[in-house]
Length: 341
Length: 182
Image 1: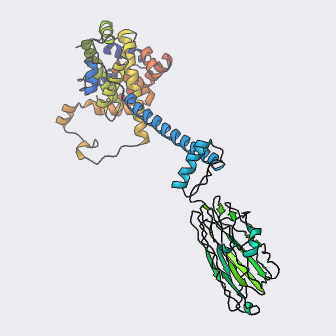
Image 2: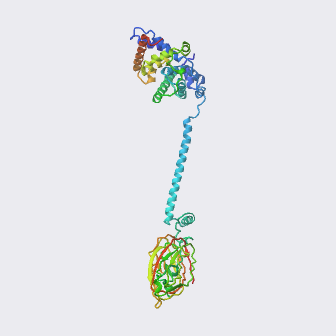
Image 3: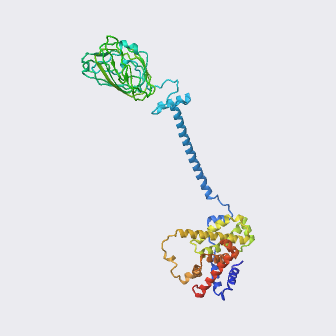
């Protein structure tokens, strides 16, 4: 098939419809001349193909590899992050429930105690971590109690044997903060004077904060600012009120053990020490952390073990004393100590 | 003048560089003319694209010279359609250049140098509809038979023949009315 033959065929096909095709063949021949010029200059890529050079790898393939590599890398990182988060969550939950194997639980507990703002429990059977709550507040004199009349409830002396031994106390913190506003006039009746003669030595470790105020006034002098400062850390948030009468004097060492457990606190109800006959009436002091009482609080601590002896020896005579005390505190630690008078 | 024979095409399919060059020298001007006649914006660049596509797929070609010619103009037609659609969607913006303003009447020298007939041919072809223009340009510039043209356009031979006839009648009428200077 030649160009002229194509044009001739086209015109021949048209002749049955036209009498003359003059000028049409010239027009088509002029159109044909459009395709008789020189070939355009091939591009470099086309020249390579014309020379028979193997074509380079398709650009699309070159681009798709890094893209897929990046995508797979992103997926791997995301999967690793998700696995890490899931693993930490599960481990943390198990550690909080103390359900990990003992060695792992121990490691986690140590790590949390050292580096985290909270602590995971240690495995069962392990000693409590140093620094966790344990207040040694076995002695009655460790707490603040002041009669409204300035007399302090006698809590030692003959009554000590009743308090000796192990006394479970539910205190949530390590420190006692007792506030016992007293009635300055209250002590007038009996002219009570209470004296803490005991030396309180808590050998428990830990930190604690205690704050107590004795507002006992004229009627008696309460030297018993033996509040707080329990080396064991109690975190007591409790309040209590107590009232009592005492006209006797009690003197004697106090020994005892107290255990405080984390996060527990009981509403303080004073267990009034029972004064021996002739020594006066003992105040009922449901103070937050008064001697012989259990306190209710909302503190935080972990396994406060409070053991120790509070040898506060109090001697005084209290008459018509009332005690109002509040103990507040927060601490964390373990205290295990004994005090000797 | 290179002649496109079945033997040349066979060697080109096998990768012979001389045969490939002969194919390009024979068909590239016709493809360029076809694209110019259709009014492509960049006929030279589009011709390059056509042959890039053709040479990459030349290995599986069958049908000899006729098959290659049909294949090449099929690609050229497809590329032109793509370019036309792209241009329709987003008309190009370019600054005005007086020398490129086709509304100005060229001098005799300019007409002689650039080929005066193209302007008149463009006017004549502009009077045809798109399908008639495709049939006539493919047949004249591509040396395609009715069957080959039907393959390129995806139409039946009868439809192509009818389009060709109507297109030629239109051109003949233009010549008779003197609207096309020959």
